[in-house]
Length: 397
Figure (tube, rainbow, N blue to C red):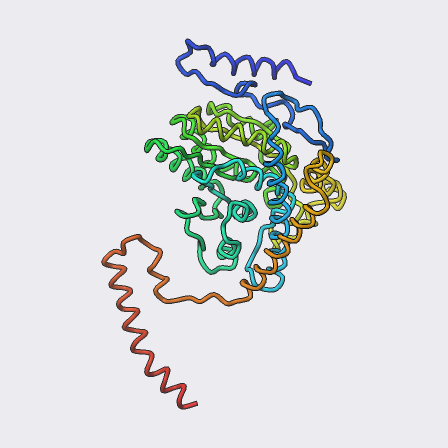
């Protein structure tokens, strides 16, 4: 039910849309205020429901089917990555099982020319985007800070510090805008990271310069062991965009249809030069914060059993089956594709990475400084001096 305060707030937000207003906005139908309840197209059982707002169009069947396929493959990747930590092949892995609709649905709305700024929990989004799964995991294995070519993939390095990537995303979006390029920048963030100053600075900069960016909050209710109630007293994290003049919305992040519907509009909005968008996706983290965390110390078994019924993959599958958009053969092939990816990932992750001393210098600057060249030369000289000693010692054995 819409409250009087909500009506007043919406009226105030819509007042700035007056054509004579010096800071006119052109927000979504609801103004700067997000929907009173998360936008939803499917209930937990996968049945079609009437959305709380008619501001969004249901995605095309082909996009929904492709989203389902990528979600199935993405989940299998996530399960395999979790298993790799138990085998000692990864130092740490933050699972995103349960958040597949958020990650796949978000990147699926982007074009090839667009950029993604991920967090450490967005590996499924990167795999869905087409980044080599082994290269995605180099950070979490400890090989490199980023194992893929960011300029080629148009995916920034996965960010461990909270919220700093929002500043980078806003800056790149502004630069692309000034160059007249048709680029949208999407930046992911968790619910706990909205408490960081960089979050607010990024939104404010993006709004002032009206940059083509979509900021995506995956609100799974937990910042490690800190519940959402300890992060904010706001009715929704989406409301945090209002103070900066950023169009915002909240969405059922376990409903892939809703995620795609809202993302499609948000990306189109940003691409049309109408400014940034802030989206809060209410979702569920089915696993612990990372493999090093015991979430049963702060989450009840009843909670975990309850959210297991909100499975985004099963929800979308049921809806697609009801519309005869997928059948048993398609579902089995999607699962088989996931198994092939998992097998390939296991095989390649069982190979020890080959490191070269020059890697210390190769990725510092595009053009090495004189100081780096000097240091590299000293290292080469030291390695060459040690080689005969190593050979002599080996022969003595």
